[in-house]
Length: 80
Image (cartoon, rainbow, N blue to C red):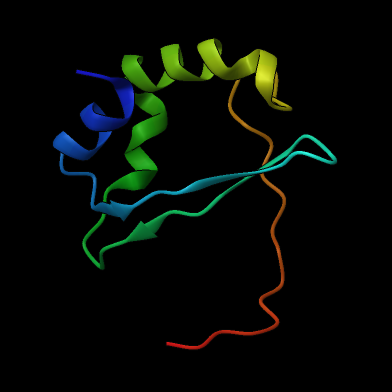
């Protein structure tokens, strides 16, 4: 089982998780759609998550603990 499948199987409440790449800038953009009862805040404590961050560290900007740097974005439009 791959890491992403594992994260969904631990019932963290992440129901959709696309990752986009802007090839011109090399920027990864990820969006997590979570349920109201999600436990996503506990994922950083899981060894599998820490291994995933280490594996992905060469592909993304990271903090000292290898967690991805997160830059909050302002929503400028949404159509449901």
